[in-house]
Image 1 (cartoon, rainbow, N blue to C red):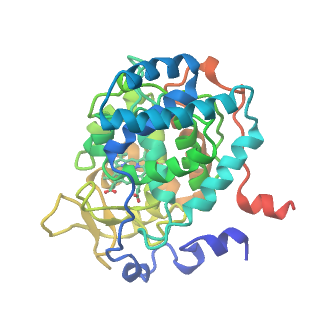
Image 2 (image 1 turned 60 degrees about the vertical axis):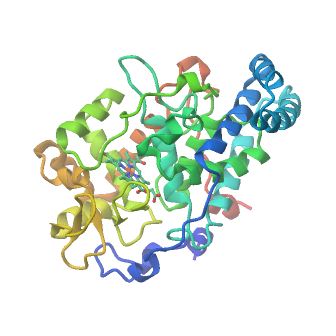
Image 3 (image 1 turned 180 degrees about the vertical axis):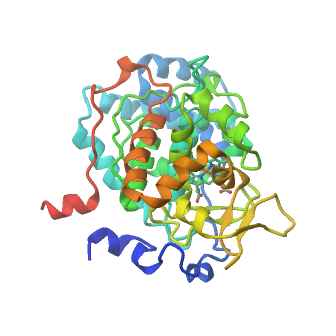
Length: 377
Ligand code: DDH
């Protein structure tokens, strides 16, 4: 058995795609780990800005040193630490190996989730990577992963980002060990690491994102609303520059994780193996009978057989819209095809909004999994 199979909180072998939900009992109302609240994120903002360079730090210092509030005093302390980090980093140009070290740390921390959800922070890290990138608007060339603006209000408070303070909190712990990395690079690398470590495909990734400011926050409403239909999906994803096939390929990320009634209002996992990347999302969409759940909550579907799985209206529409259906069926029939298409489009998603001249390399890197590294020792 491989190392990551041992580490994987829910291993694929234990749950076949459409088998009854032995996982359900395990998943019932687990306690959620608490992370720093959205408002403490303004401090992380200082960190990021400081890391970004001396000029930026100067501007913040002016603001901080000219303010007497408690927040400002706390920020002064942060500023000192940040300035030291920036100094230490002054002559430091990180290499791929340095990013691999960050990747390895994320992989380690991802599995230290204890009783949180299904025993892994992986799914919520994927959601953070996606929500920090999926704000991109190609017409105005704003949003995307470049400035990591979800650190700031109002973006951290947008309804669609509810619950992501947990993922940002996990990442903040890692940032302390690697203060030189930008938040955008850290969060997107988190998504890459989570996909790869949860048995998914290799996601090409490279560094180069820089930290921005609250003025760079994107307006609310750029992320999809699960209660809507095909037109909405197209308007949201076409705005980012994606086509129908890419919308369908990206949606398969819902093989992972679950909905939380205290975040989106929706409830439950999409698959029986929410911490393993599989094409089960598509398989279940076609192989199960889906009925509207009768409950005192937003409109969502439940699988008729067990009643423990869920689909959002935006998931279900992939089987109803003719163009979407063609791709969804192809991915249900062929996991390798989906892995290939997902890897490509997820990588593109994570690069949205980053100017070409910021990238560290012309070609993206393929980061090694923990398994690969232990095998080569
Ligand atoms: Fe999603 N997603 N997502 N999603 N998403 C939710 C959770 C997760 C939509 C709505 C929701 C993508 C696309 C869409 C993940 C990845 C991706 C939740 C539940 C809702 C609602 C939040 C909560 O209550 O905790 C809608 C609508 C769309 C769409 O219209 C296409 C994409 C493109 C991705 C991606 O990563 C590429 C993941 C992972 C989760 C599970 C998070 C968790 O905490 O578990």
